[in-house]
Image 1 (cartoon, one colour):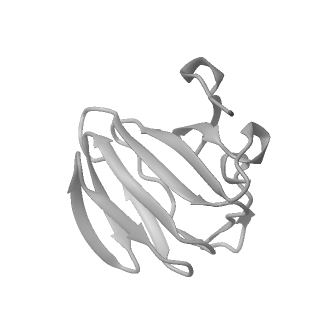
Image 2 (tube, rainbow, N blue to C red):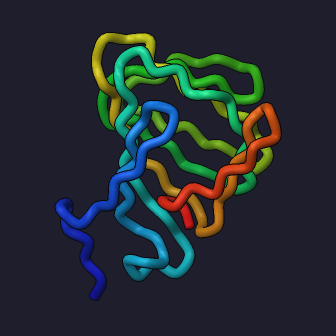
Image 3 (cartoon, rainbow, N blue to C red):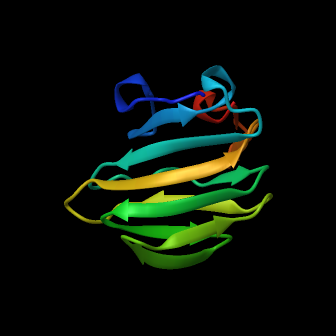
Length: 124
């Protein structure tokens, strides 16, 4: 039985945010990936378009999520469903780090506004 202990999470950082990966093919998952996001105060991540559905659950803090041009303030306990092809931007306008739990299917890629394609290791 694959069990991933907290100390076994693998950290990745991009655009000022830390992604701590727990479930992906390297840890035994065949179809899903899951990670904890740590979004520091003042972070404004660039908008990106995802090619797979993501489920974004805010564990702590407060964020401003913009999905396909519609901004929504989300607070701890809220869940955002991000459909394939949606453009997402995440901003933490507060003075505290926010934490999230995100799941998606293996193979997620994202494209930035300038055409840069990202294949995040925490989702592949």
